[in-house]
Image (tube, rainbow, N blue to C red; front, side, top):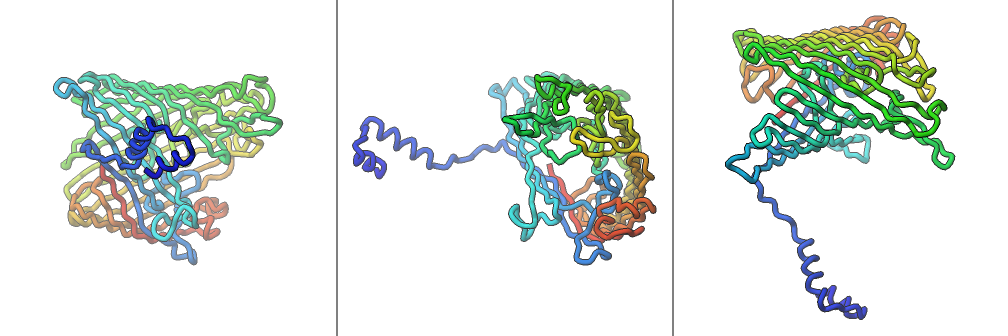
Length: 478
């Protein structure tokens, strides 16, 4: 009634509208009750604390080589958490329609400055970052058929090498849409990159607006076709992968100028073989993959296998990436050899070259000198000794090697000893949560030492040996 009297006092009283207006205001003020039961929740995360004894006053730093991410072992990874929630819808025709309808969202939180939880916030030293890597709707087995469809942004990827945190073959996680029929999937994706400090040059151009030079984001479109062939009673499969990438013209104006670039293209071909291996305990497998990316689709760097993260320098004579390429080879093995022991190993190899002729560094579109060629490889193994169902003794041994340009190779050997409590009492490599006590020691070659080729060395200086001690937890529940 307060609103009624104010309107009347202002001589704008409209009796026919007063009650409907009050009803709208009242309804807007009442909270919408939630009573649906078609809801699920999941999470992945890791959290803990670590330090490097030789670095005074410093938290633990990654011992892995620069540019390789967690390839080389992930035990020193920093805090990270994801929360995923999904809504599930039932078809109207409950008796005859078996369509599975889901809408899922996932939020991720991390900090580039170390600590994520406790006495930190996004406004102080903690620098917490938030991301929304998933928000999509999907309909699976539409009306009981072999057809499915999805729209949005999702973790669109297959198997990973968990001990190296590497989604090695078919990580297409970005925004787009797709349809599938049985074992064949066709997707159209539109990845966006907004980090203008990145040395991924072809994704940007310079536009002139009112005489001011501004960075613009070029539109990349990807068409991805995947087909899986099962055989041997589905104990083996071969997945075939094809991708086509296109970057639009930077502008409709003259593309020969220094600030506008013509359309660019790229393609990817790959195959992955997966086989289940018979061992005393079920769950053993071997995965092997080969992938070749050409042109702007030659991405595979920083422990990331996304093909749209173009690597290397352009051919400035043509402002294109026609001669760029990347070859990736991957192997992933898990053997559950007895109720008391499992072995998980991997090997990865990547050779990449930009479009410039240079075998070392070359200028990108912004005139920055970046490496135009790299070769990297790593091999590692994790051993699980199930001392008790609730207590696992884990050890890891990794070797990593990276050669940028025509300089010498940097290499690292790392060993980790990880006594682990498993509260769910499962003698299984995938049992979670883990409560881990971690000790890692690494040795670098002379080139890595001299050039500070790891986050640890950049903190401590020119040392051949590195040490890390930490207590960390890892979990997942989906």
